[in-house]
Structure formats: structure tokens, C-alpha cells
Image (cartoon, rainbow, N blue to C red):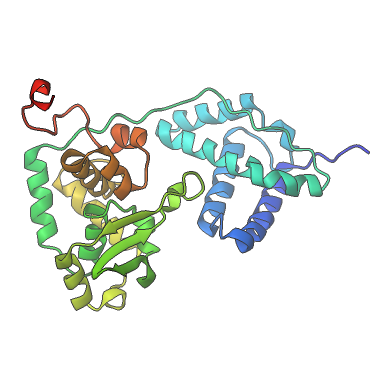
Length: 291
């Protein structure tokens, strides 16, 4: 019996349905991930001049490469163009294949073009810019203070901050710890962050009523982006500079292992995107004195 080759639209629809089943079983992928996958896949198909009623076999490496060229020609940043293409991967992920086979479908492996755009290595901000950040942060209050604190003091991403709940703060041996799994790495390393909360931060958070005292929204981070761009940072995600500053300073003072603990990322990722290993982080030292 010849297996059926579905259309792109059928695969998108099926992916949405099986993702819901998978989420009921293990909690992943979340609705936001599914939405981004579907949006990115449709964007790639439009750029590649593929109708959604085309067979899934039409989504070839050559057509995906054409979509990348269209994105770049439209002025989309290369890393953003690659993000759209990478979102196709979720529909072809290993966990989806049994569902497709059960439906009697033939789904070819996804072959991506050899397109890689590496973001520039992290460069530590100068003392003047860091001083501006310090002055700005110390004047904050309310939702902006809490959001900025979770990024600057705990290296959190804005989406993870919005997902925080009371149970993410754990009391152990009289101390409070932040405990959560970063959403971005939940499906890969699954590394959990467990980091102490400074008593001054916890006291202020508690005095403000905890989560009941805040109304965090996407607009909170949009305003933060505007504030940080006004200080001198560039890019659409200026708020991420707070995360980078946090990881870089932990890296400087306590080493790469501590930086991985607070960020939830591996050392390779940290030393490229979140810390500046070219800058010395120790005092003058002679190895002979250590022997």
C-alpha cells in the first residue's frame, strides 16, 4: 500500500494537533512554541513562493534557500531570517514522526541549506555605559524594578520572567532560592537554574506584596527596551543586555561554572554570546607561585 504524501497545510494542521496531545502527556511544547513554529513555517513558504496546498516534498533545501534570500533582500536581519527557517525543524522533530507514521503519511527528512549566521561575540560595555545602567536601575520601582531585577540579578529572559510563579521561589535552610527551567533550553539540556536570592532583594519583593503587587506584561519589557536604548544600547532586544551584564559579571567574579548555573546555558554559549573571555578577570598571577 502506497503511503500518502500530505500537503504542507495538512502537516501544519497535524503538527498543531499532535503538539496538543504531546503537551498533555509531558507539558511540552508550549502553545507559544507551536504558534512560532506555525508562523515561521508559513513565512518560509510564502517567501519560497510555495502554496500551502503543495505536497510537503516541495519544501526542499533549494526552496528554503530561496526563502532565505527573499528575507535578506527584504531587509530582514540574517539571524532573524535563519530563525524563521529554524522554526521549520519543530514540524520534523523526532517526536512528531510516530504520529505521522500512524496517519499513514510519508514525511521526508528536512534538509536545510548551509546558511549560518553567527552573532558577533559579546563585548563588555564600557564603564560609562555600565554606570548609566546602575543609575537607571537604582531609580526603578514597581513592575519595572522587578522585571529589571530578574534580568540583571538573575540573568532571566523576559519570557521566563512573565512565566514566574510563587513556587519558583524556594526556601531551603532559611535562605530563598530562585528555581526554574529556562524555556529556551527546556527541550534540549533541560538544565534547571537554582540560584540564591539576596536578602535585600527578597525583602523588597516581599514588602511590595510579592506577585500580587505587580502587573507584568509585554509592555513592561517594551518600555524597558526603550529606556535601555536611550542609555546607549542598540537592537530590538535591548533588555537582553541586562541578562548579558549579569552573566558576564558572574563569569568575571566566579568563573564559567557559576555563569552556567545562573544562565542555564552551556559554557560554549556563554563565552560567545554572554561573556567576554578576552578580558582578564583575575589579578596578576604567577603560576610558579601556585606550584
